[in-house]
Image (cartoon, one colour):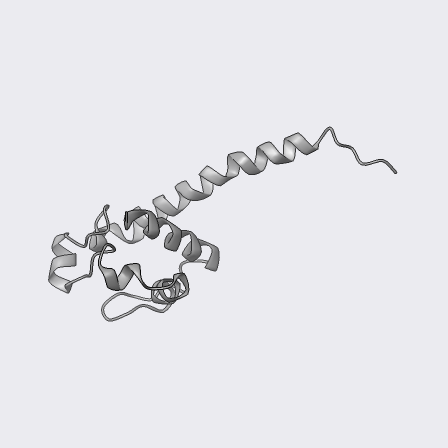
Length: 105
């Protein structure tokens, strides 16, 4: 049986189009769940962030943390930050980590 190569471009296009949607989803999740404390820029300069003494995503301690460490913090919480293991999937947490990395720059 000969493979149908005519549908291959359709699959490639679908994968290409879905990638920005996934990144947008992480930005939407960050906006909905994180900006109140961390701020849209990740600096933690919000009233809540200042009162909780939230560390900026640009802080060297955050920047040198591994993706697994950041994912564990998002999943399990840390200090006053609540755990998100019941509200976010592993895929959403991974996407958030990648989004946070963009805010470090």
